[in-house]
Image 1: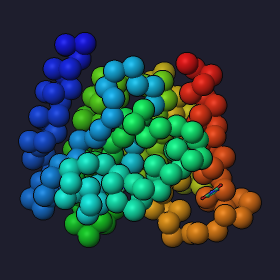
Image 2 (image 1 turned 135 degrees about the horizontal axis):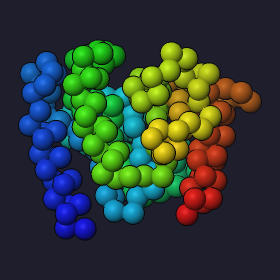
Image 3 (image 1 turned 90 degrees about the vertical axis):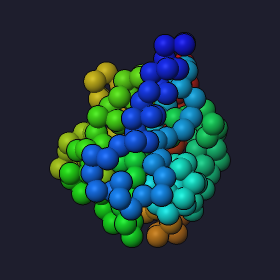
Image 4 (image 1 turned 90 degrees about the horizontal axis):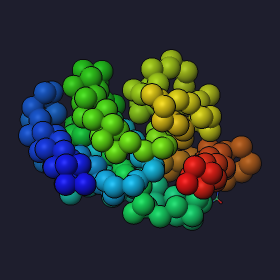
Length: 195
Ligand code: URA
Ligand code: URA
């Protein structure tokens, strides 16, 4: 445990001091991620920090983050504090534009190091950017969500990004929200199955 702790501390330091892409010029804070680092079976990977995250240094604390918490806790009966939450890139893109490929590439080793250190049983990718970064698939998130994939022996479940759900309030059968509630229940069932 001491070794794992110091490996996480070292990794966090490297992430916080990173200057591998231009986002280091405009960020206020790096957002490495948060959650338990020991016996944690689920890692959630979003896209990139937004304004609230950039200002606080914490992932998913703005509106999308509040919806993520609701989806996990109300929809899946999964406590937010039991999962490790991070992003594909650790610094905010100006005006919340999509991360550029060079930014995703520059940050990729950090994400992989986090996955290898945490060694979760399940990784959930939120939205197209995170899903494509890890699966390399050219299919869109609508085609991929709700299916289980394998990432180096870790089960990977793509889901819609909560920001996408904020823009589409429908809860009708087959709507993105309705499908997301199905997905988070499937996530919970898999957690229970594997534990
Ligand atoms: N959207 C993301 O993808 N990540 C965050 O941390 C916040 C909003
Ligand atoms: N399904 C629900 O049960 N609640 C929501 O808020 C969205 C989808």
